Image (tube, rainbow, N blue to C red; front, side):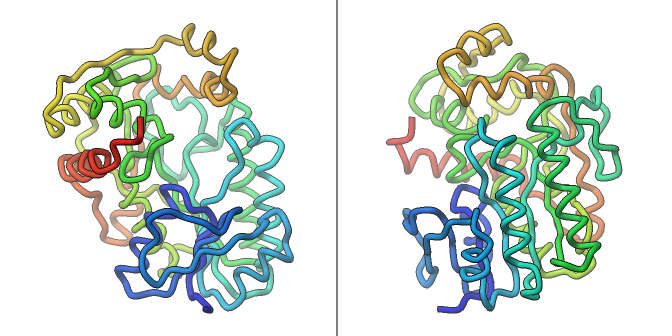
Length: 315
């Protein structure tokens, strides 16, 4: 099968892109290391490939109109492996004619001291992973300017939704509440904190792939308003799920202690600045340009609770 759309990475973001493309009747190929994927939609091909090899990237994306980059190394391997992964993808796509849509987060901006994060803020990363994100974003847009690969970037905040089990609002919040346990959040239940609904991120990335005016730029994908705190979000989740809104706020010292035994948790420590002050993302540029609004928070929570209830094995 020759697919018009190739999705690199089959995690929650890749799945959301797949869902949106299938709704639109597009041909889709999903790519990961194993060539296996649970609950694949009918007609979608899943193949294995080593994305660190430009020749393999070229082969697996041959004939594609749009390629979506959602693959990433393990969290603790970002500084060592992420630049090599993206370079391989850019090299493999150079000259192919395919457009590259990259899913990113907002680490490159660093601590904005509560100022809403817009696309025109300067990169001011002070963390290892933030500096990696800045490097990746700059390299991708440079490849676009140099005429190697058409590139556009969609950025989301901490995300939640179906399949988002390892995010800050995955198994640590939704799943624990579903099982009658306390939701685990970082540092403060009172600070405003923007969250991105995964299906909205997937739809936004597909829109960026379709629209030529998106090219050569980064875009913050739609997030629902008004801004609410982590505690208010958990209260809404609990009400939808019909459970008690139990919350455990994890202090920085606890992350430091747990990080001694868990490489993934250790990597969270440098990112905790996002929970010490208001973390607010401005997505008005995307909304005005493409006419898309975020799914209402109530509806997004309803669908996410429904998904976690249908997957009780996730704890």
